[in-house]
Amino acid sequence: MYESRVSVIGAGLAGSEAAYQLAERGIAVDLYEMKPQKMSPAHQSGDFCELVCSNSLRSDRIENAVGLLKAELRILGSLVLRVADETRVPAGGALAVDREGFAARVTQILREHENITIHSEEVTRVPEAPAIIATGPLTSGALAADIARLTGEPLHFYDAAAPIVTLESLDMTKVFRASRYGRGDDYLNCPMTREEYETFYQALITAETAELHTFETPRVFEGCMPVEVMAKRGEQTLCFGPLKPVGLEVDGIEPYAVVQLRQDDKDGRLFNLVGFQTNLKFAEQRRVFGLIPGLEHAEFARYGVMHRNTFLNSPKLLHMDYQMRSVPGLYFAGQMTGVEGYVESASSGFVAAVSLARQLRGETAVDFTANTAIGSLGHYVSGYVGDDFQPMNVTFGIMESLPERIRKKALRYEKVAERALEIVHGIQPILSYSKD
Image (cartoon, rainbow, N blue to C red; front, side):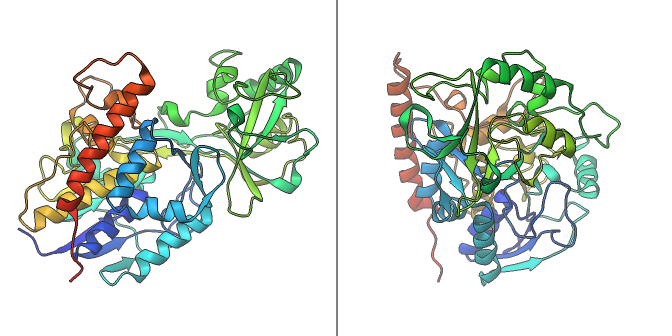
């Protein structure tokens, strides 16, 4: 149908995964990335696969849906998962990475690949098929406008990133190391008394936020909601969210609230505030977060920021393999399709790439089905029924139910995972490729 040369627009997690999978299948790839010539407000590095909101790829446990998604991608040869495993840092039962090392390694692999040509330039128009658009939540204005022109619909909402502080600036007489329920000591924990929490809470909900350069009220996805917005839902909201103390004790007593910090680099010198995505002004971040015990004199390696996100009305526009319904050979991937999360973005890039590769060779498409974590995401974004389509993390709730009813949740999820991995192992030989 087409010459075997594909344009991939964007070198985030989805675009990097897509470019690699196409190139490994012998297809010439033109990978376009506007960094470092043009930087978005949230990005700081010129490397590919830059992690903006957090350095965590979340749970690595198979009984968790995102853990199952990682297991499936590992079986299928995902670049993102391979490099994440190579650059992981301690994070209890989660997979967290050295943010800079992870991005640098992915960049090196892609730049050295014989089938990939890197173009450091901004793309402002929707490319001709065959192509994959994976410009993500920070799609530049010109390209976003052209996508809106093509689809006939506007596309945007907002999310936020958490701040990062230096270890040496923390008061370790007030901070203790532990993971919840005694699962190691990978997190730094700042316990708060009721009085300390109430003081912090009042400062947080009255703090001044940064101005958003938009004429519309921003829509904020729940998974990246600014902590100050979450707090305004009620005084106890944070105690049941990012500051919940369950599974953590000080001298055998559970604190009133706990702020957790997660390692952000391989050397353990940088830590991010878990769940503290924010749009507070920088001075306000220093003042308000300085009320957290142990962070009184914290030095910020990066302040939290809020930025525009972009996503499509995918149920109307995309097939389950992320191909545009009205434009054969044009695929989208990443958070702009309505998948939410780093691993989910990589998964969509993988599916788009292998689907396009098979299309170019005249082969039938592979449907992972909603019995797998990978397939459930594609079926969710393409088949959602309702008037308020919103981005979604992978969950067992969007996967096909088992034919038999199992009341015990842990056993039910175990059986769902077993079924999914069996399917993916069966698909893997179909998607295998020769480099000859």
